[in-house]
Amino acid sequence: MADGLAQPPIDPGVAIGHVHLKVADIDRSLDFYCGVLGFELQARMGQEAAFISAGGYHHHIGLNTWESAGGSPPLPGTTGLYHAAIRYPTRRALADAMRRLGEAGISLSGASDHGVSQALYLKAPAGIGLELYWDRPEDRWPRGETGEVDMYSRPLDLRDLMAELEGEPA
Image 1 (cartoon, rainbow, N blue to C red):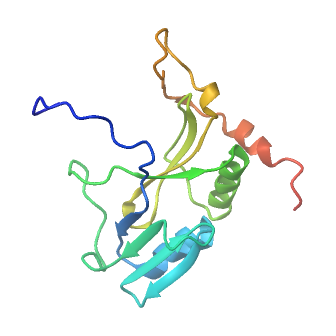
Image 2 (cartoon, one colour; image 1 turned 90 degrees about the horizontal axis):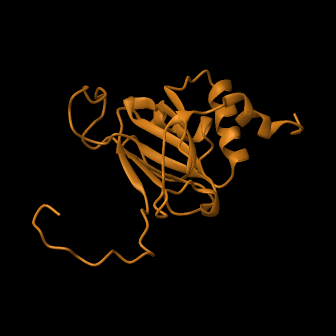
């Protein structure tokens, strides 16, 4: 560690509760997050903020214009959020997300198999990087000789992913 002080690990029950994003336009962001991805609006504060979630939780994502109304995306070469990641519970649910993106005409900037997960990458409104991903079951994670997780980045077979939706009612 930078200061040389080793600390005990954090409690394993700790989890990221939500992400709050600065956006330029609440309506455009809601059109994407709710209209395309399918999140549900839980609360709204006019054109200043909105809180959305899956499954009725108070919010997984907060969207606000408090410091960013009409703003432009972050410039390359600056610090800040690289991307926010949204974990899907099943591979089929990730395939459905890809279907939704395609139907909305939203293109991917990448798609990777990381061994532990499969991920789709894109830019959301306001230029915010998003990773939509599904975790493989932990017993299927690649491991090195001493048991450490052996992650990698390989191209994701998008046709194989979309095959998860075959036989789905139209």
